Length: 155
Image 1 (cartoon, rainbow, N blue to C red):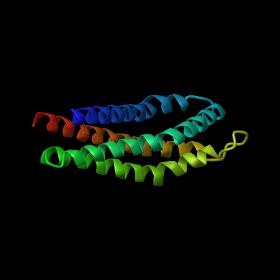
Image 2: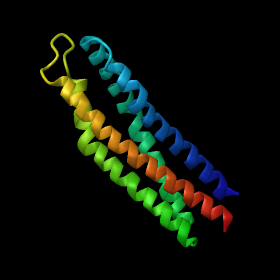
Image 3: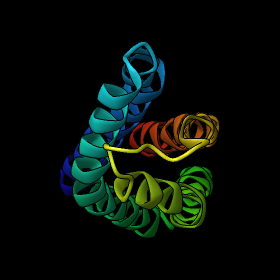
């Protein structure tokens, strides 16, 4: 019973995370790109500030839950394999985010809205491309975690 509760919490947290990141990539940022530059930059700065305070905890919690599931499933070889793959992907995505995406967000957060720096839209486009890669791997991690949870309950 405890395993099912932990799996449910992990899948809900992970699914919401992946859905949120997918929505940012597919809906939010394309709409921001339609705005006038100053409004676009102001909106991007606000989102970077909000997400910058929430996402580290969300990513860490999801990783901890995934590792917890992998630990609990250590006697289910197939389930352990998929849970471990999910945990590895999460770990690498956190590192990828810190190294590649956070520095871009920090630069955007420090921009002056009065005089936007040259190339700021190129910076946004780079972030969007890197984020799309991250979203793809987030989906793979969610699939692996879902498979691990499904295998463990059917054994």
